Amino acid sequence: MRSLAATLAVLALACGAHRIPGTTIDDTPDTRAIVATIEAYRQAAERRDAPAVLALASSQYFDDAGTPDPADDIDYPQLVKRLTADYAKITALRLDIGVRRVEVKGDRAAAYVFYDEHFRIQTRTGEVAKSASDTQRMQLVREDGQWKFVSGL
Image (cartoon, rainbow, N blue to C red; front, top):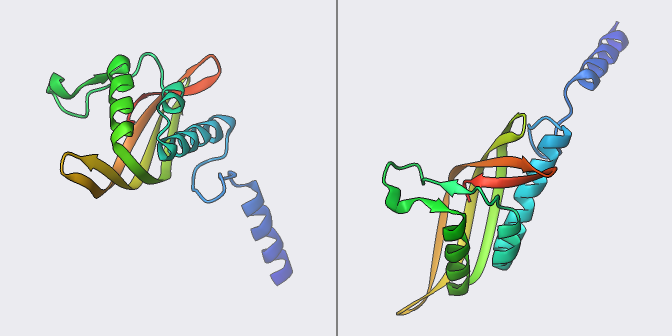
């Protein structure tokens, strides 16, 4: 009887949804590609490689920073300027991103992540160490078969 119960338990687990290793995210071609895109962003950000980050962003990029004030809105041309300027001041960066959840609806997706970043930035008074951590929603769109960020960077 115990053998039958153990066999049934193994079969039940085998029939369950497969997960991306190290996450609770269903392993589908889309979710795997989205997680890979986020990892590519993390690596490019750590290298302070603005062209590589921009290659992962859609030309339709627009982020309102979650506020009604248009002064903090960022579109693609502003993203280009901001990344280039910010990365020029940063002397070291470590970024950890944990993808918590991914929702895919056709050619649009939202990834809910937790990030933890530590960096050194050059200021007028010298180099300063800073850190930040928070949850973030990254929104993506599929363009020509590739997932690209449309907000949340």
